[in-house]
Amino acid sequence: MSVEKSAFGTAEKITIRGSGMLDVSLLTYGATVQAIQYRGVDVALGYNTLADYQTMDGYLGATVGRYANRIAGGKFKLNGKTYDVGCNEPGRGHLHGGTIGLSRRMWRAEVLSGTALRMSAILPDGEDGYPGNLQVSVLFEVEGDVFRITYEALCDQDTIFNPTNHCYFNLNGQDGAPITNHLLTINASAYTPVDQKLIPTGELRPVQGTPFDFTVEKPIGRDIDAADPQLRLGLGYDHNFVLRGEGLRQAAVAVSPVTGIRMECFTDRPGVQFYSGNCLDNPRGKSGAMGARQGFCLETQTFPDAPNHPSFPSAELKQGASFRSVTEYRFSK
Ligand code: BGC
Image 1 (tube, rainbow, N blue to C red):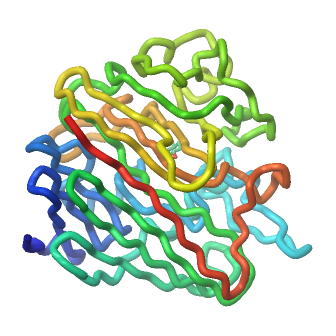
Image 2: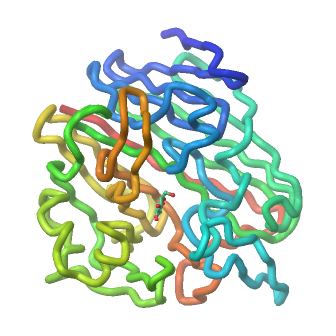
């Protein structure tokens, strides 16, 4: 099948196609997932113009990093030296790699086949405060009904690296009902509670008997407004779940009762940020305004603020070592 290319402002939009049921459109700006059409339903939130991606909040569909999610106070220590990556989230800390990061730059696109596209970028030493010249590539592939993202990186200094994709899904359709009706399973027995600044406290708290228990499928909306201090802090779910097992394994499953579309998230990462889109508030998306809980994210990752928590899985990337990580979104109906 052939790839479709079109201009998207000064960026490019490229669509790769799988079985005929699944098409994924990507932008060279931010290596962004702009649309995921499954059986004719667009299940990914996004914008129609490059200017909207450049000016509106939310990291819709973007590749984020170098360090996805938060770093307390914008500071961490590596090999005895303190690095300051800045606090780009007012009042909280460092978020999603800083002011440029992976999401606010143009990437080089290389079409490998009708089903595969590689985007690459080189981030200079010191950009956003991070050590090392970092070569990053993200391979986007559609194989049958599976959308696979493979991250690869190499750095010329010891550094930290924790990329993710920030796609907001709505399996009712991107312009459909809020995602609170979705049935969700997360294969996690614990999560990492946060402080007022949404930074993990370091505790791994069992989900059992709490609103965070998604070990058995339940509607996202069932407990989302419960009187739970952690839910209050996030205005809903905005927490890292500690995934069971290792290697590429099923992290989560979401199903829309409206369309019957089911999406399984597979990853080799230790955690997943389940964000229920609590702060979405954009005057326009692809079809009209977007409000809270119009989409949810499953951001596969190393735990937030891991560089300041020696007990968390490490996000260090050694000089000359190859980073490789895979996340898959598998669709069915
Ligand atoms: C964070 C949220 C944040 C959102 C958009 C998510 O990954 O966990 O707290 O509001 O990204 O920036």
